[in-house]
Image (cartoon, rainbow, N blue to C red; front, side, top):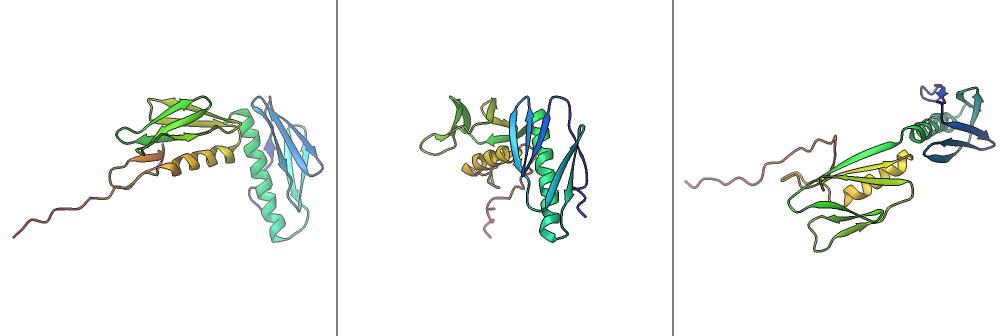
Length: 181
């Protein structure tokens, strides 16, 4: 039994859910998302509660049960509240600038690095070093944050580069000079 799959999803006001054959459409104030119902899972909407059932007792069907429930729950939450990831850029001369819808990043290279905006993603910049990535699709927000972080990962000696706001970077000691005898 899937602990996640058997939990019902409460549909809040302002979000509408439509269950069709093979897919679930979720609409909210942020837009709409369509989630494909995976093999071996069925969805049932009763009032403002969405439940999922497993159709056959196989390992894959039970795995799909929890996965579909989690994807729909994330879509409902994203279309109601939205998701946000915060990246912090540290380093002398490193900065983030908005250029149209995309970003121009000064990361210590000989040229500014450009990052084009994806549909459904918004960027907010604070103090040229704090980048907030917002959107209604949790997977897309995480993907964009990971792509931007990969441009200059935080290094352990001086702590320069992108890190998540809640990430703890373990610092290493540099080379120590040994006294001559």
